[in-house]
Length: 374
Image (cartoon, rainbow, N blue to C red; front, side):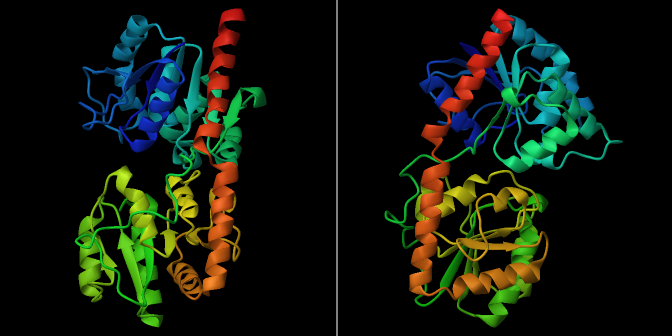
C-alpha cells in the first residue's frame, strides 16, 4: 500500500507515525508544506520526503492554505497514493477535501476539532468540510470524537479511536537522571515538571501564577519548565518580578531521547493546557510513576481520577491548580507509591503504542478495500 502522509509540522508525533508506517511495510511519502526541510535525523529511514515548492504558514486561515491546492493535486497525480492520511483538520484535512481525492483518512490533532471556531468563522467551515469529505476519521480520545460528531455525521464503522500512546519500557521510574551540570536537586524539595510549550494554549500564565501561590505556602516547592515558546520573555520577567530565581528552573528544550531522565528527576507532573486530546506528555509522566495535576478537561478525565492518581483543576483557575500542587506535595511515601502503581498500570493497559497502532492500519486497509471493491 502506498500512503501519502500530509501534515503541517515535523513534530515527534508525526515522526512516530511515519516510523510505524514504514515498519508495517507501507510505501510512505511525507508532505509538509510549512517546512523547507526536516530536522537532522528526523525523517525515518524509508520515508520519502516531498520538497514542496510553495511554502505555507501553519497559522494561516484555511483560505490562505487552500492556495497550496494546485501543487497538492500535482503531487497526487505524481505519487498516485492508495490512501491519503491528512491532518490537522482545518488546513491539511480541508485541502484534501478540496482535492476530491479518495480514499483518505482525516487525523485530528485534538484542538483542531475541540477548538473549532464559531459557525460564522471560516475555521469551523473548513473543519466541517474536512469531516464530511473524509472516508475515515482518526482521533485519540472520546472528547474529540464527541465534538466531531457535533460538527458532522460520522459513520461509526469508519472511525478509529486510540491514544497516540508511548513505547512500552521507554518511560520508567528507574534509569538515568539529568547530569549534575543540567540539574542538581536540593534535598527536601518537591519538584514539579511541565513539558508543554510556552504558548497561550498551554496556559503558561496559569502555571506560573499557580506555582507562585503554592510556593507562598510551601517554600520547598520547585518547578522545572522544559520547553520554549512565544511566552519566553514573560516567563523570565515573572521569575524575576516575584523573586523565584532558583525556584522555577528553565534548563531549555531537550531532545525526545532525554525526556525520560527529566521525568525521573521530578515528583509531580503538571499541565495547565486550555485544550487537549490525549496528551502524550501526560502518558509519559504516568508511565514514569508520577502523580499528575492537570486541567479538568473531558480528555484528561479519561485518564485521571481525582485523588486516586492525580488532581484536576478548573480551566484557567490558578488557585485550584495551586491547591492541587500542595495536595501532591503532601503525599506520604505510601500514597505516592500507590499513585505510581496506578498510573503505570493505566498506561500499560491502555496506551501501549505498539499494541494499539495496528488498529489504525486495519482502518487503512478497510478504506482502501472499500474504494477498490465498492
